[in-house]
Length: 512
Image 1 (cartoon, one colour):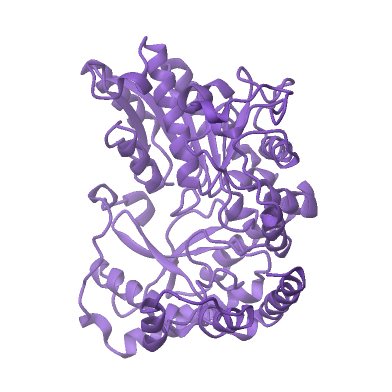
Image 2 (cartoon, rainbow, N blue to C red):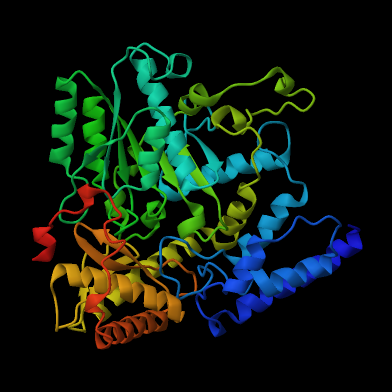
């Protein structure tokens, strides 16, 4: 491709992106991929001869762009998938102009990455040591997704505990005759905590009960730790959450930090969803203790609207990651300050990956463009919108809030006066969710809270307004009434029990 063709195609792509941003509200939030389009995509033959850039762009305009995931729309409220900030879109391209790897070396992108990680620490109040970055002080990495961030945090906890006990998990593995290391999490914790624990050889975590606000129950945690010690096991790590995926609940971080310090446990905080909520000064008190975590996972591609995927893991001591992952083959040996050798270690020493993309480019662009104050304003606005939604729900007898709205997530359900038995309400709200999604006017999903299947609205789009939430209320009530009119009481009760059995428990306090 010539520079001229690159420029022509680049301008055409920018025009397409600009058109999509300008006309965003004119299209459905979501529409299913037509059967013929789906089949055409799945059965595409491998191109034998190259295609022109014009044909490639035409294909995307016709086949890919019209059927998005939906999270680019201000009325997308499902899951925790925010839209990409336009400045981040552009700097995603900027990151690939020279396509550097953060593995090692003396190049500007590596030093920019160190600076951007420090900014994240400062943003959320994580300790930044005077000699940052260092093995004995705070350190961080950027990775592709919060699941990978928590994986690295739990891997560091594993090696930390082993070394403290006089052995090496990297060299000996987890199958030797050592006390089993135990991780503690709640049923509200992200599934990546379970997957990571299993993949790292811990086995399934101990699932700790939650209280009426869906936060980790401290008494239950302490009882579980004591019981494991009595059985000769080795309590290792508490995996807490700052903003659960289901409700946005923040575990009692200060009390957990105190308990972990007393018990000699690693504290990992999964702040992927809600860690940046600390920027809302009205909520900052809920995050007291987060700065004491041994490791903290963050997802800038969620609440900061950085393009997917961009996540971070912060640790109190860089050596905890380095002793867990450092392995430099001879073909990568470099001497600091000589040749290509940088004055700081490459990120491959702190990470399971070798080649690593320049994630700090779009992240740094968002941080520079918005500034701390701009991000704090957006996050506080989202939390304010959540409270507005709670107030609107309270206006209607056929809607019911089902959990405290601590951050930007609101859990509620449609409750018609005709029937209020639990099994029917679960089936009704599941069917309501599917109809809302298919109609494309707004988009939300459901989640199980104990035995209740409820609607869940997550407000994270930078352009969402009160009018969008009014539209959500109107659509839920309209579709709910349609479900009742169509006598959907008899639709099959399938695909309801798809969560762990621990989640299906009666919550009397919440029901009251």
